[in-house]
Length: 90
Image (cartoon, rainbow, N blue to C red):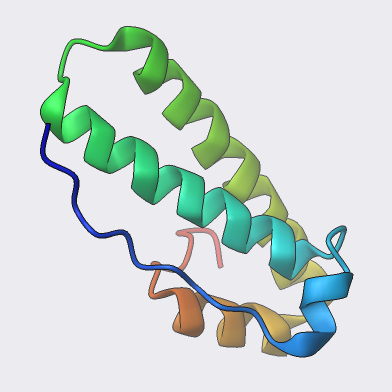
């Protein structure tokens, strides 16, 4: 089994203690998404993992929509740091 190196995203000191913050949750969802994506490259017919990936993507999308409504500056900084695309409705 070939394992790709996953890019681990390090948080600043302020967010390591605050695991309930939107930024921490988005970062942990992004890590899960990247891990599931690399798994699905090897196992294309793993439909349960595909379902899990879709669920995590939806959760991250909702959190990002919430953050973009509440604080646009933090939203822009987070998507820039995670290297993810901006949602279409923004």
